[in-house]
Image 1 (cartoon, rainbow, N blue to C red):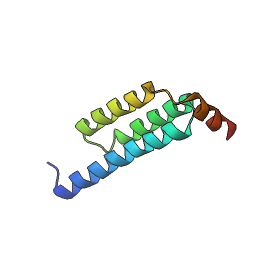
Image 2 (image 1 turned 30 degrees about the vertical axis):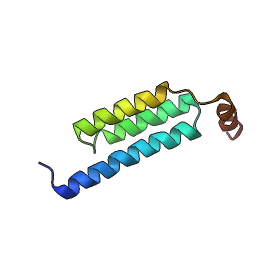
Image 3 (image 1 turned 90 degrees about the horizontal axis):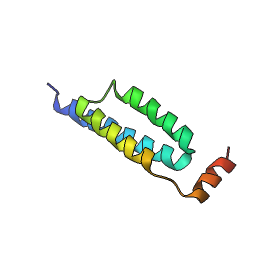
Length: 80
């Protein structure tokens, strides 16, 4: 059973993971983004509840399906 503080902390970690995925989506080429997602999911599995982890996996999968505009892809690649 979780204590109230643990639930709040888990929720904060869950939200942080989603933010990391969003940041990676905006700042990485597709292939790198997918690698970053896998790393985030790998680490999140150890700290999130099973339900939160399943939601995070679904969220990451949706973000992986999205395409970023070609112009933004070029800009990201130009900064490498």
